[in-house]
Amino acid sequence: MTLSPVLHIWASIGFVAALAVLGEVLIAAGMRQLGDLDDIRAARGMGGTIAAVITNSRFVTGALCMAANFFAMLYALSIANLSLAGPAIAALTYIGNAIAAKLFLREHVDKRRWLATLFVAVGVFLLTR
Image 1: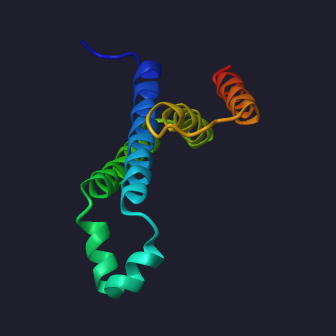
Image 2 (image 1 turned 45 degrees about the vertical axis):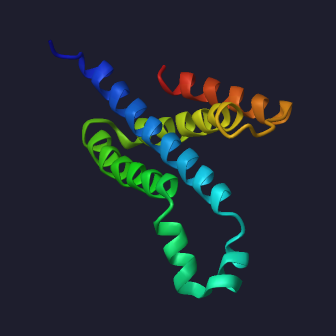
């Protein structure tokens, strides 16, 4: 079974955005788990700070997702027009980040941010027309 070209492009764009959201959420969760890097640097020095970051599994997994995101974006840009893929990936990542911040990081996302997210979603819809 093969996907239609349009569905293939949107699946690629969605995959890139999903990897970006997952990577950013994991990196944020890892950095929250670590705490203030200045405090770590004061206690352990620069080498200890680097070691604390690169041994944090959430951070490392998030960084790997961001690396995969880069290569997935290269693929998406090879099959889609930049004028569609660039804004769509950015917008879907923005929307996904707002939702993930609320659900997984338990952040307070105020009405103004939800309204901005709605406008971004409408913009993505208008891009497809």
